[in-house]
Each structure stands twice: as structure tokens, then as C-alpha cells.
Length: 465
Image (cartoon, rainbow, N blue to C red):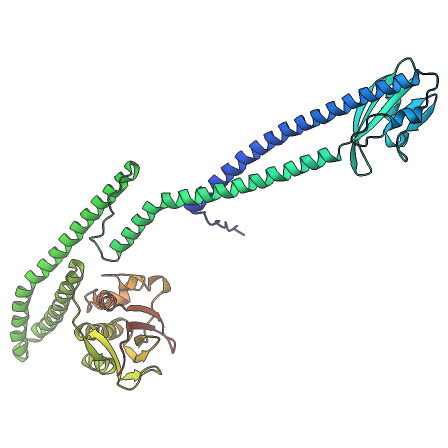
């Protein structure tokens, strides 16, 4: 079995810039927070230990002096010691332990630490006792055969460092959010010219060939603007030149084509006098001349759209009457009314000639390539009038349902669509242009009541009469 590789969606440029700023701010804040925390922690620990050692040495000296007197009372000596933070003191003398606080004894210190001090090695050790952090300092008292111990609580230092850590973490998160916000702002500023280029390109694709980008004072973007405007100008000139060429050619063809059609008409009037082979040739010539005339007319119409001179002559039109007349002129089926149509009162503002041509082209397209139109339905939806033309042909493949409205389109069923040689190849393209000029839309879908295709035209409604 062949593995299917799933392609993950790529992040947009704006998202990538935002994430880059956020990641940079996070990394910078993490480094600064780590360095700051390490420096402050080392400083506070050093200060705390220094103060503890200083106090322990002073208290050990006082204890040593007290033990040298003849009437030494160790509990009284311990109560007289400096105890600003409530640090308990212990003395080991003559194999006995003495403590300044009830409940604090030798079990409050690690065994290894006590043994090291009792062996004559002054020591200090940080350890955990009952959920608290303690610092124990042990000193030997020479000359009195005793050892002095003092236990300092480091809970305050732990709370300070914990608060510092949370503060730095919050500052890091705030810095990351600020970096993301700055990145978003920078990405928006960066993408604004790109968005303007995209809007201008979309406007040109929609037919507004005069669209240009405004001049920018940014030296880095001025080249983009000038290049786009130069390209747009060249494209506009090329399209206008091609449109003028098509229009000029079509106009030039009309005169000789009219003469040719007149000549064919004269020959057709004497058709019965011609031999059999001549009559067959005349029939072929007549069909080709009619197709040629249709092609020239369609080219002239298309050239008006390309040149931007296609105008609408709007008037109030009763859609049902207009569609019935257009369908009847090309031999289509009777027009049916959908549930949204109100008798013959469905009215729109439209160019009557163009809408008639839309209906005729759709019915003729069904006759040529779809086995003939089976139904023509006039209906109304939400603020739109709708005309549907059904056929019983092979239908239109989903991949070709947009391309079929392009000029001279040839798809997978090209033999069926163009094989007859009767169409100009511009009928559906003109349908799309006429409907778009009215602010509507046209599309093709499967025939819901059988085989074939359904072409649907939607045009904005004025309202029922």
C-alpha cells in the first residue's frame, strides 16, 4: 500500500513574522531572567551566609569565654547570646548537649555534620528539615573542650528567591507578549504594500485595467510600485491593442461577409435550378456563412467588453415574457414558473437585448451539445431573479464548470461541444459577460431531475409588479 503524504498547511508571512518576534523576545527574556536570577541568588545567599557566620563566630566567642569561668552555667550562657532571627544555639560539652530552644537538639542536624565538627573540623551545611531550609554552622571551642552549633532558618531567603523567580517569569511572559504585539504591528506594516498590490492585481483581474499603485516614499518599496505600475500599463496597452485589433478585424470582415451572404442568398433562391452536387455545396456554404456571421457578431460583442465600452440600456422588463419570447424564437420548450415567480409580474431592470441573447445562447447551447433543452424555469430567490435551462446531454464535469464559460474552451468533451461545428465558441462566454454586466452570476450544475446539466442565471430583482 502506498503511503499518502499529508501536506501540513503553511503559516502565512504575517504569522511567521509575529512568531519570530515572539520567539526572539522569549529567548531574550529567558537569558536576561536567568542571568538576573543567578546573580541575585548568589548575592543573597552570600550575604545570608556571611551574616550567619558572623553571628555564629560572635556567639561562639561569648560561649567560649563563659565556659572558662569557674561558675560556668551553659543554659544561662545560651540565653545571653545574640539571637536577632530566633536562631537556636547548641553546645556539646562533656558528652552532653545543651540547647537554647526547647525541641531543638542534636537530631535537628545531620549526623555527618555533627560528627565532623565533634572531630575538630569546623563546618557549615545547608539541608532540609521538616519542609524548611536550614543552615547549620558548627565551630570548635579550643581550651574548653566544647563545640558550638547554631542553626539558621533560610525560609525567608527561599521566599525571596521564589518571589524573584515568579517576578522574572511574569516579566518574561509580558516581554514575549509585547514582542508578539510588536511583531504583529511590524508584520502588518510590512504586509500593507503587499496587500495593496494584491488588491490592485484583483482589481485588474476584474477588468479595471486603469488601476495603479500610489507612489511611495519608501526607497525599498518604490521599485515594487514602479515595476507594478509599469507592468499594469504595459498589460493595459496590450489588452486594449488586442481589443482594437479584434474589433477592427470584425468590422472589416462585415462588409465582405455581407456581400458573401447576399450572394449565397441569391444562389439559394435558385437552388432548385442547380444540380444535386451543387445544391449540397450550397447548403454547406450557407451553413458556414451563417456560422461566420454569428462568429463576427460575437467577436464584435466581445471586443466591446475588452475595450470597456459595453454599456447597459436598462429598462423595466417582465422577465417571464422576455424569457418566453427568447425561448420561442430558438424553438425551445415552454417556459415553466417556479414557486418564487409571481405569474407574469416578475420584474427586473435589465438590458432587454442582452438578456434575450443570454437565454437564446443557453437554449442553443443545449440544442447543440446537450441533446436539446428539456425545461426552462423562471423563478425568484432572495432579491434575485433566476432562470434555469435543463438539458439531457452528458453533463459538464465538475472540473470544467468554471472553464466552460471561457472563450473557445475545449475540455474533455470537446468532441461533443465543438464537434458539430455549428457554434462560434463564444456563446457561453458572452452569457457570462452579459450576466456579469448586470451584477449577476451564472453557473452550471447537474440536472436535478435526470441526466444532463442545468445552467442557472441569477440577476438582481427590482421587485414584483
